Image (tube, rainbow, N blue to C red; front, side, top):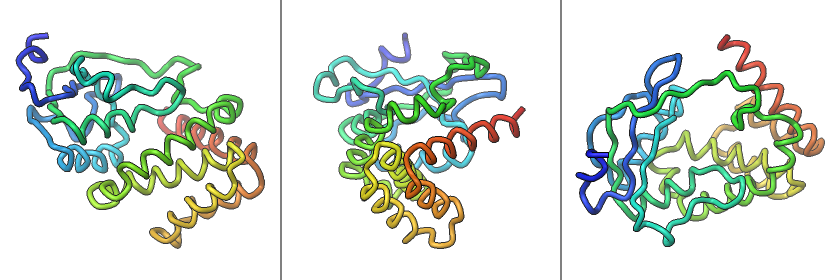
Length: 212
């Protein structure tokens, strides 16, 4: 509370460190510093590469309602990008949250049914992210930009937006023409949304087994 109360008025979001059974998150570890939009975006790729990007954000109340948290099942990434574009972001080394990965119904564990149910919201979210932040992400967080393109393709195929899925896949292939994963997602998507959902669920299950 004291750290949040002492934050500069220009800071719209204060991001604290978390901890789980694998150690602190995010990695690379937070430093006690204040970031502008470019600085915040430059932190995304290293965290994506480490697979540890979880943090606990504390948002200044007066940023609402100008910047709103999603009211559907869209990911929260767009919200944090919008905050970073309009306000400074402060990061903290203080650990304020411990979390666990053992719940079987975690939203981060995709199931075929849930993936298909939320695909339309996820596809619309990817379109908004790329429209509002795509160029900046391509410049300062290219790995994250490619991930959003791939995510947009997957969600679009599952939502029945085949042409959008092909468009996102083509954009990803221009950047990674030899990527087996991108080609596999495109082929699965052309076979249908359910095939894409099965592929996504299978891949997530295999990743969990490798970590076990």
